[in-house]
Amino acid sequence: MKIFIFSMAMCCALVLASCENQIGSNEPDSNGLTAELVKDADKGELVEVTFRMVDFDIKLEQMGVSANTRASLDGNASYLKVALFKGETKSYEFSQTFEDDNFGTVSGKVVADTYSLVVIASKVEMEIEDPTNIYPTGDKVNDTFYYYGTLQKSDLTSGTVNVSLNRAVARFEFQTEPKPTEVKSFSLELTGGSMTFNAVTGLGVGSGTQVSVFDQSNKADNAIIHCGIYTFLPSSNATVSVKATAYDASNQVIKTHTFSSVQMKPAYNTYYNGTFFQSDGTWTVTIADVAWPESITSTYDLSSN
Image (cartoon, rainbow, N blue to C red):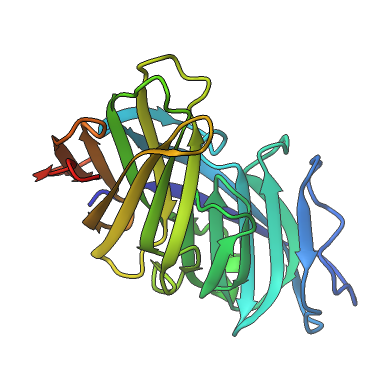
């Protein structure tokens, strides 16, 4: 499977300091940048470190088709967090949002030491409690990328460290034939995925049920329904179930069907395309990344739903 890659360069320069034990004063100008010292570090040699995202290039997978590539973090992620840990204790956390003028470049002072490094870039704001407990601050998982590794003390003083971020999520993507006029909303309820991510394993923690509701009231009559739901998977080859439901303006169910034994993989799209509102239909099921598509075709009998 092709890995979606960021390259992140850290440029480190030693600075003189005496008893300063907080993230320093030479941060870049930014509207919303935060660089927070979570735990008082032991007195020691400080380095000013700059985390800079460079050569960001990712192919987006939309509707099973390779789409555009972008040359910057902006547009593919809206929130960026960099966290340094000593054991299970968070020593430093740096964060940015897409509103920052210099989104993708973060600077601060840290004690020169060896740390566990966690980087999370996401479409939604994420909380990093520790490397094994990372989750969205809201009620939805969205496209998320991560890195976990050891940042050696020598890395902080020697120059440049290149880091690759991998996609953390899997996505169930759904498309129907043109919807009936009376359909005003549509929901996907996924059971078997997780809202919590473990960067050490690259997998979700536990499993549960997630629901996303998509407003269709402003869609043209007979427009297709195309929507999706992201999740963290608890295993590298997971089987989940997805309940799809169409509602009218009074929130009454027009049509519902549960797709069982849905195969999903981290960093892959599982794409269902078929005739949901007819009495039965053939659904083309594609599990694919950009480089190596794998297709499975199944027939589902929807006549009793």
